[in-house]
Length: 301
Image 1 (cartoon, rainbow, N blue to C red):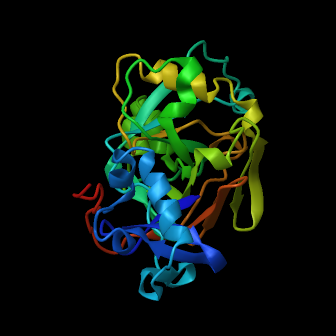
Image 2 (spheres, one colour):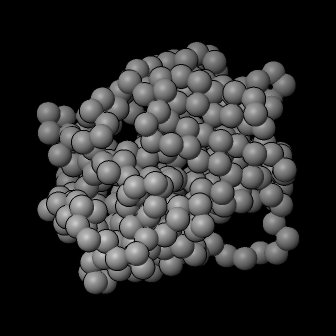
Image 3 (cartoon, rainbow, N blue to C red):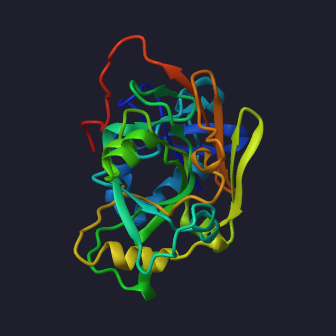
């Protein structure tokens, strides 16, 4: 099942892909009961059976929308947390001459950094090194604290793609990662939340980043240093995770900053990141012409 959020920024409706790349509007099909992807996940796994019933039953044509006729937003537009991992691919550690970490290196991105498929990536002021990072991400399906490694799958709703866009001047200049990882629009995520049952092995998926038609990153999640059970167990030892929270698993080698000389993004560039079985995300780098605040996170559940 491919779930998604579609519509205007921070006003997205929850949907599911049905035949011929049509979106079934789940807000309409549920009579208003399902208001967002996070709200859907809050209902528990039984709601997925309801969605299957909507998909297999008599579908009102008014509930169907062509996928290419609407904006596809961040798959979860109001998570309580966006958690990422640094240095979690062996080849990425090698390209920067870093030692392999002994435990997961965790940092956060602000929810105000969210963006959707084909949304602009706003080139930040006073920055020269604006970089891409393709990542496999997973979305939490039920509340958990101290999640055991042997029960990790039951806490995951599904998988998605995240581009951990990074402002390297701030990231390396601050020697802290939050600011350089949290600029507006630097967290495109989606286009789909592919449910767990469709991805039996998330540790064997090809990941790729293509900048202006040039393949910059190409690897496989089998190169992860810390796998998803370990990430989830470590991250949740003292932090409660809620349905809709997003955890990204790190990026492979090939990011722009570690070319010699660096080859980062600039206005006018197009970046596409993809993960096998999950689709792809495309965004264009643009200059801001006026300071319009981010609308994320959305204000409803």
